[in-house]
Image (tube, one colour):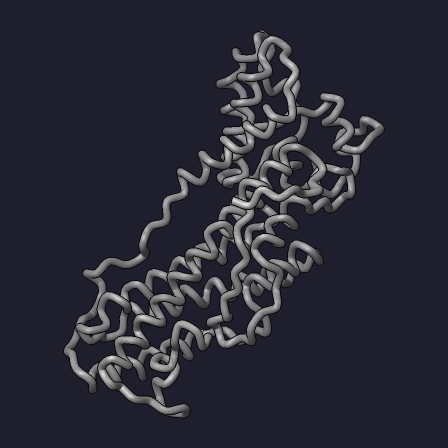
Length: 335
């Protein structure tokens, strides 16, 4: 976990940045695009946690917690910025109504808890909404009796809420071994597989000049909404490739690596689709970024394992030969 200091505007954003930042990782873009020059996942997580569209001192992701408008400097007309209103206690964290009502008794008041919490709620069903629920329940419990909350308290709330989300987000494989169509073995069958796999990949790829990380960087730092459309196209391409791969006849020698690749491609669809949600569910995107390195590594490893098996079986393919891209991958030469 990266614990270096940040310039985030509030203790909440500071804790989020410290908790979710992961090491940099560049994955050669596997959808026929040039190597991306995007910011690292570390940079993107910082950018998401600090993005402040209306310049009110309250990052966009926090606006969802407080029910404020990320595009309005003074959401409720208090005559000050939203961050100043938060600092003065005029705006407090907002959670979805069912959770607020369920915890109304914790504030020691007969007034429904949501009566003193202005604003809207995070997107329904989003991880940001779930985060807000976890965060707000802890906030109310600690705040009962008028206790003044410290920076350490707020940091602990965020850390706990994010850890609860991470624990609940268990990645599951899209395909099982029973779906692998094992058919034959030997050098000729393996060569035929390389040809078919390359063709399936080529038929379902998307021709875009940047990677998903680069487009996410454009969306976050430049407010480029078209970048989100391109991320969705990449995500859909991962799905199409995964579905095409799992249907291929597979030699016995490649069955395990083949299944791993199909599942890795499917998982890259999931994590990339999480990138596309950055404006409506920034917590989901942050968790997707935290998972990206592992998912990308799994995909890379599966490609390498297939190539290694082909090479071990002496399936020799030259540049220009059908199937060459599946056999030529090594742990160091990129793709």
